Image (cartoon, rainbow, N blue to C red; front, side):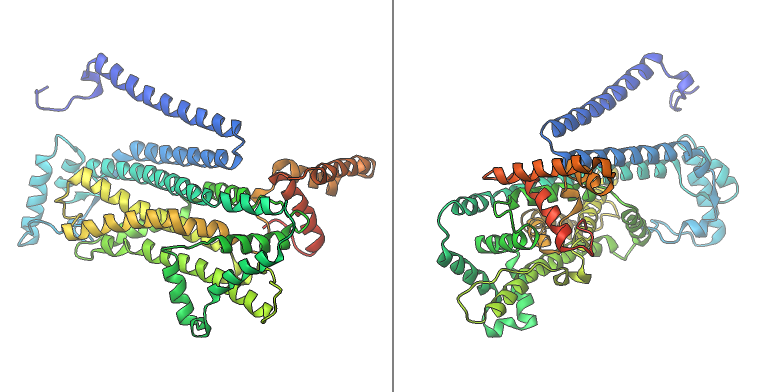
Length: 488
């Protein structure tokens, strides 16, 4: 065997194989133990939603491992599939550096090129003898393998970063919640309540600002600064509590929002099938001269701005409705949550849009990073520097805007839907409701006894916990919405 030729495993020193395997196994076990300890930490802190999100991450890693296994096992058969040169030279992401003057010389160049790379990819020789090219070379399969890995890792990191920053922004509203709950211990101040509602109703604007175009423009620019004010929080909180749990005025609305965000995080972090379809479409459209990667980088920014403007506009519509109901009277009516305020009457649609926005942004940054590390900044895929800088700028802008504006807005405004979110009901509450509905007559007395104890514990506490408030709200919703399910 010549010194310059690559060696197979049967001619590789055993100490080299052992060292490489040891390092790979050590890293794998370290990652697995780290995820396990993180899961135990979430359980200890009773962060069930974050624990479920961690399980989703593990599921994505398992899917990624299966994809890697398939690419590794089938790389030989795939690379031995040969296609005609004309099929291999269409829809290229980069233009060929040299073009043959005729079909015969093109075949000759292919054969010569294949012979120069025989040491790296034996499949080239087989296809070159037929005047063809491999469907996908071993080098291309390896690069595709790395890209899928980078995409999954960047998506998980970006989603986790955005949710953590969004939580940090929402926690800044905690003093508002504390002040509201402390004010409830004092004598009722009707004048202050009317004053807060008047400030909230100012969102509706003057008469000329109530036109649809002007209202949308104001909502669009409001998302960049002061997207949520204290008066917004107070009025929306009051509207939510009056609609969903009127008997629990001490309901911890802030904690409820954080838990809904944690619950939705497990959906955001998962790469669903339609996102993989989008990735396939993007790879298909990444053609030389189309600059599709540059233009598609604007898609998450445009969608994010539209979502943020719509969420702001919903608050404005609520303010208009409150102003119209008051109609000059001193009494300040509460806002009325309704699914009709949202696109297609579906608050959950915004979660899917944010999910798509985060994935598309992660995809763009991951693709940029992968091309840079694989081919370098001067690669034809990277194109000019003038295309690279806007991509990075847009990616950073989407991350920051989504973290500090859109995600907190989503957490607050989507509470103005008609129903509680099912994921917020604790497991023991669901089991208790199940007992009430399924228990036989012999066990009915015991179920009522448990219900009475739960109700007594709720009313005995001066500051009901979030779980107690949710339990009470579920019972109320069952009475007020007999024709509908309380879990949506």
